[in-house]
Length: 317
Image 1 (cartoon, rainbow, N blue to C red):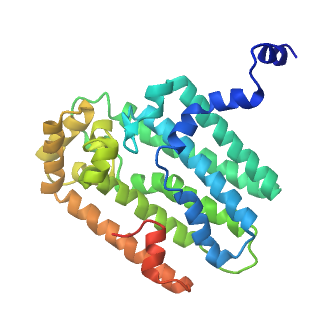
Image 2 (image 1 turned 30 degrees about the vertical axis):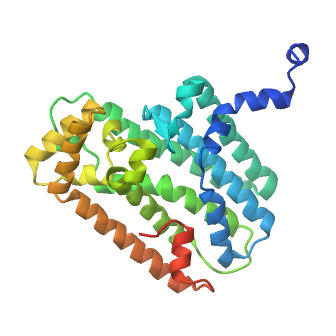
Image 3 (image 1 turned 90 degrees about the vertical axis):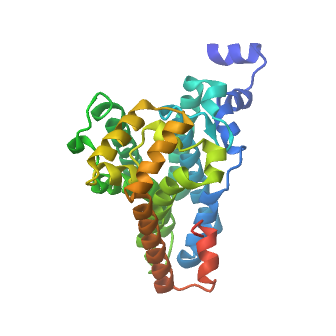
């Protein structure tokens, strides 16, 4: 009662307080989101045929999880930009931004409960959330603990491509698989789209790793080779660090540990990734997953043109 009276005395309603608390989230959502989560839900539903209210709910749940994770990612990665504008935490501060993220993750959990009314499904959702945080934590563990204090390059300390894939399954691919699972719980069809969701997730992440280094558009939105500044063990970085090019690998390791924004130094690192074949390898892996997605779409069948389907989910390279 005391807190309610205080809020009333200040002329602040619950709605006003919520708007203030969620300012970082609202700022991010209004900064150019492509609504890919909602589009993907509609994309999956052409096979699952569930009621529109569930498609809308799953799109909202996925969007909340996605936007919330971006808020925290930018803090953990010390990012300056997101979608070409100042990152939310640099405007609102780390504490409020983390609080907004946590609130929206709880809101997504509440929505799963109220919309689906299925204890087993809620349990699976919570399991996904735990694995999401474990996988994100492993990324941070490798970057900020296991490798950060090592002055000398030690290959056995570097995550392998298998480690990369294991983490990816519970992050980018995991979110799409969660969407498929939630929608599938209300479907009366026999179609299994989980394999498709996993393939799309793998393609998304590898494509993101590639574009972060090679795309001018990404440079405008996130900065030049931002993953290298972050010190991220992306696929091309892992590929070079585990290659036979030991001298180049050692130098690349030095650079990613600097967390530098110096364009000349970052260009040197990018040149190493190109020279050791890591960029070419990443391109090939991206094409392999794109081909696998296309084959799965053909197996599932659709009234829409395959190329159009690929464009809807952002696989247009």
